[in-house]
Amino acid sequence: MRILPSLTLTFCLATPVTAQTTSELLKAAEDALNKKKPQEALALATKAIEAEPKNVEPLIVRANVLELLERYTDAVADYTKIIELDRNRHNAYHFRGLVHFKAGKIKESIGDFDKYIELRPKAKASHWQRGISYYYGKRYEDGRKQFEGYQNFDSNDVENAVWRFMCMAWSDGLQKARRYLLKVGEDTRVPMRKVYDIYKGDAKPEDVFAAAREGKPDAAQLNQRLFYAHLYVGIYLDLMGTQKAALEHLNKATNDHRIGHYMWDVARIHRDLLAAELKGK
Image: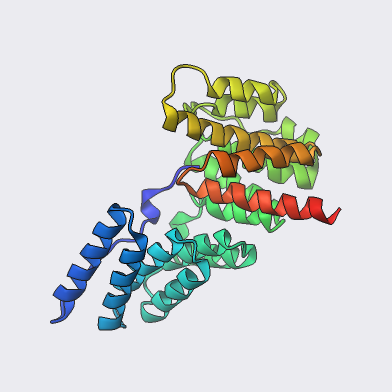
């Protein structure tokens, strides 16, 4: 899925007497992040918060750093404080929803996404993250509708068609899901066309991996291609009832081919839920 720039929080620093100090601290925190020093960035953001506890901008920076450090409970607390301080900071609901999902709190993520869309109705069609949370919350009909709405926003996204398929597979059965698989346009990302074909029933999992290795991708390209290949083959095998094989692919996606994208967290959540299910059998 594509991250949409319209959902990005923007910084707009206040200008009281102490703002220059805060601005300098936040700039230093940004520099530390660019140098891959998140702990230093965290300390600087915290210092800025202590200097101006009612300024939401340092809280935004710290929440982002905490999320990077996978300290999700602390990040949620900062986003909650942002909402308390500035009721017009609607994007905070979206970002808190993302963090809730990463923490495995599916119901809470749905609640935040719903609130965000209530406040920003124009974001409804493009909000694929809500559809994914609906899926893991087993609200398959709501998920189906969300992905159908996204189709009107971007009809070239194979992943959207796959997630809508997944929702229908659980609510209406595999045959109906396949029969009514959404048509997609030109998704040029490799190996998405082959991913689409296996859900359609026109290809096999090994075809996806062959497609992922075609051409001469560099190491980063190949890593990303293999992540998506293992993710969607794993999910497909899970739907087909071959759960142990599915878990192997999800482990490969999360452990061997990590990417810096929300979909990596989706793969991790699916992996953990499936592992727990198999352990309980």
